[in-house]
Length: 427
Image (cartoon, rainbow, N blue to C red; front, side, top):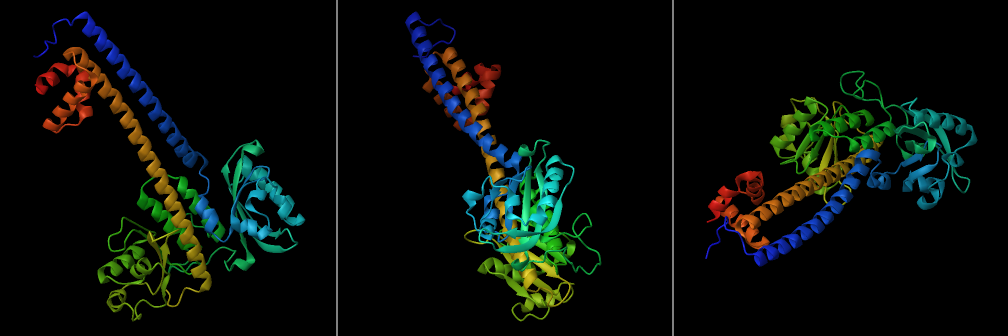
């Protein structure tokens, strides 16, 4: 027996329906509160990634150079294991300690001036030779590079990021000499950079938005500026045979990548397959890749350094460093490339996590909005048809399957005043 939606319902039935509707609304309110709590937590995580733009923990943990953060007064806020090992103090015990305690007295005045300038925004960078004092009297000379992360006139609110590269690290401490075939080639702004600067700029990229290819292009440019013998650089994410993303600093690097893909062999493919660094002093004469050697004969690339990008597990990509000179890459070049590759992998992982959090937040917002619309539509149908909440929802689902239309779209029609058409279609 069908119910006429226009006929008044008996009083007991109306009371029962109102009670059922009240329970359904209460269930919706509780569910919405739970979803909002999850949404707020995820939004908080996204804000932490975006607002602080702090260095990724993986970068600090795996790089063999001192990476740390201080406030504007010079107190250590974040410290990586490499710095802790250098001064002979555990990471946990270094938190809150003044950086000046671990420097030779002659370096302290310059550091204090730098803290004021960087923390207030008067200076954009600081670079100076320093001597670090260890707990047991050991001393290590190196280069300290600082850049502001959070600028605030109140020193305790400012945050400054630092990189410390010591003389015994095997990493060149001065501006790199690059060899591109075009004299004077440098970083994107035309100035030479140190390895410390490159690492700092790379980690800053984790907090930026934009096209992934542009991000990889910027990373490639920084790598080219940091590796002394690099002429061109490209970055391949995913399998070289079918990469998800590609980025480079030049068309020369793109063409060199393309030759390896056409030959179906080369340093990039081997590095991705083995997870090991692959190098060649002359791509045109290397017997490991005869097909590639023939293709490379018409290009300017001679030396290649292919470094896998991976923090743990299988390689996630390859950093390809090219040079126009034969036998261009020495021990220092390889060490720097490996160091930069670790930073690249960590930054890309952080960018991926931020994107995943944003997608999850957006999905939750959409789910929350959709649920509200669906429950409003259920209330309309319950009142018009004199049915329960489950029956009202079942009718929406049945019609959704029949018409191949999403439930939330049907619910939106009901809420917008098209309930009669939807009711007619359910019969």
